[in-house]
View 1 (cartoon, rainbow, N blue to C red):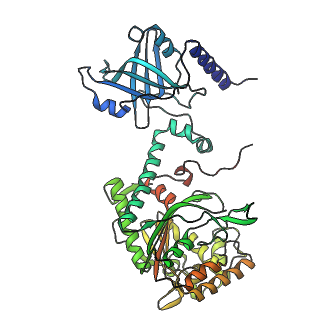
View 2: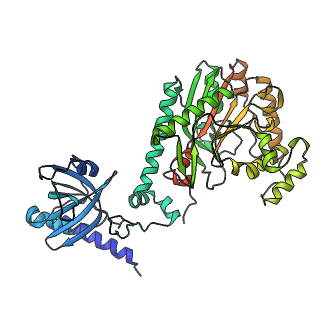
Length: 494
């Protein structure tokens, strides 16, 4: 039995055939547009002398015999169009009668104001640009003229983002914020003399983070390759080679679970500068993100998720161990692994029994501390065992000169005084190899070529990785990372 939607689609195909019989092609090659909807509204003058040519998708339609009103929506707004048979002529009006919601059309005419006060295009010609064979998921229009979309299924919105953007114009604003954020980050670093570089996405040895990779095989080389999990090690090779300020803004890939803050494919900004340490990087990150918020919103204080977030620098600096003692109530120096396990069992954290001590500490931090890190705050000096690429902290070699930036309980950035001692780095890699053999699937691989690069001498370097998707989640007030990625990774459908 054919469902109702299929009947609608068949009716639209019949109209396409009728249009063809009238000599009207269903899919045009172009249209000379003079104004967007917003520009046409701004150009209006009551004397009727303003003529415009606009194009867009039909999002509402009301026919009254020899006249028809519709609204055309484009990227930035929408405008009403008035069609009258006596002005268009019989043949052109036959085209108007065959138009449906979702069709893309171009119109030319003069601007006027209706009795209800709505600025409108009085159409003098019309052109079909693309026939919509599927009806758009557009709901009813309220008295104010606002469309209420019927596309409410979250999973369907992600799978059919084109329909989501069509029905929910506010979603387009999310991706405008994303684009402007990326544009600003690039401009900021370019302005400070950083060089944007590109490093391999396919790598023979993955590294730069503690994560599991995606694996592939190169047939011609008969070699196993990995999608990169980070750009760090290649960017630091650039530092060794004499490119003293470098950054890369691009995709990383981690073969991990999917949740509100994690997507297997995500966007990272990493930047590195010679002769800096992690305190210098904090200052750069403060300046960058404060400037970004001011650029986007004109104020350092923004209201998101019911909280006022203040990006005015300087931001607090809080030691990692101090925060664990404050919120979990334990001093790690005198706390056994079993006590850490008990803390995690109290919160029903899964899969913790086989974890080494460093991972247990990190899980305690995530469970007990992160939810309290609401305002921008730098968390400093992580245990060295959690930081295989960072220099030991001056004065306490059990800790690393590392910070993470947290906002709204979420990690946005991770940075180090980069380890540049090749012998120390080799030893850290070997310790990671032992952890991998003991069952830690996220442990770092041994990268002999990277150690070789360090043996040529890498100057003291400060580096940082910033999660662009999570940053945009905050700026655009979106609860899930899938809402800020146009086409997120989803489970395959049958």
